[in-house]
Image 1 (cartoon, each protein chain N blue to C red):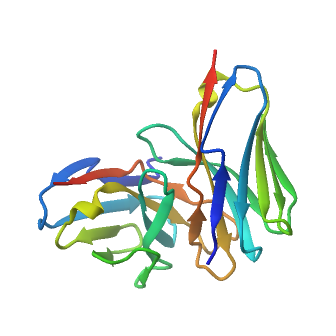
Image 2: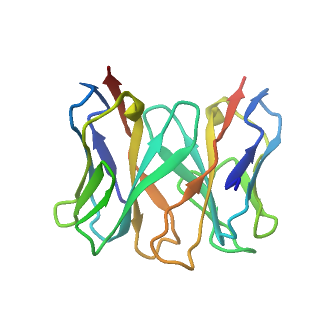
Length: 113
Length: 114
């Protein structure tokens, strides 16, 4: 059974510092890995999707890497801002899974001014 | 563009009551999903519908039923609510016909069972 782990569970950084969020998974037979952002009381917003054949994906200040062999993905957020405060979740989609996602518990991020 | 719409946003039930959570998407997606989110546990899949006319169990289906009413709508029913079903419920959709597309989520239904 696929297990997805995110460490740390919570993180606080001063504004301007780079954020590094980690996600690990136990089964390397993934179709893709997705990073989401969740604001309090809201649903999930897709940030980045990395296909199994890719090593990284970038969007603005966000960069996500994928290493299937070691079962790890890292989300980098450059020059953090208070507006980046949210919970970040990673999820893996296994091959032949009809799109089903297996989620980590998330990392709660606070960026202080 | 509304995306995925869930109703109601909040609900309080007594143990043993029944209710149906509604979900509709306007993106012409063929696959829809119901998840629950509990503190410290991430999201867990309850049921999914790969395409109109099909439904299947996810990781935690006990105590729930679903109906894929048409391509747009996917409802989740609690027949006899229990306190363990207190949670935040999210509906999501994706287009499985297009590879590697992210899932789109609604804002959730916050359900309390007393």
